Image (cartoon, rainbow, N blue to C red):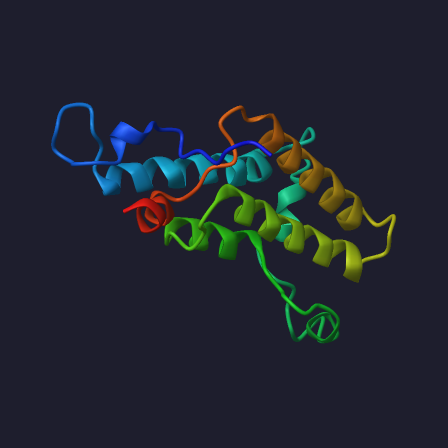
Length: 151
């Protein structure tokens, strides 16, 4: 298992205001940007004019698909994930990957195996997991979590 990274070295965390050191706000901004790069990868993926992420932006209508909420234990959509990134709710990029896994597994569980939405879910999940695995600095951990661990 590779060590967790924020993309910065240890000297960036201590004593804000000193040359070369970053404030917690700046470290958190960089962490959110790293997480958003994975979200953007999914959101911006297009196949010609087709936008696979479109089906995952919002949860299905409870009125149109009432059984969805009986079948799916943890409903989540891309807008909810983005909001959680923006509000510093993720402790690590691994936690974000787990959330993407829940999102896309929900779609595969609810929809027919060879439906377009199930195929899109599989493709988008594979794409983002692979991007995370291939990121030489990943996994990333929230600077807030690192501060709590190491002071």
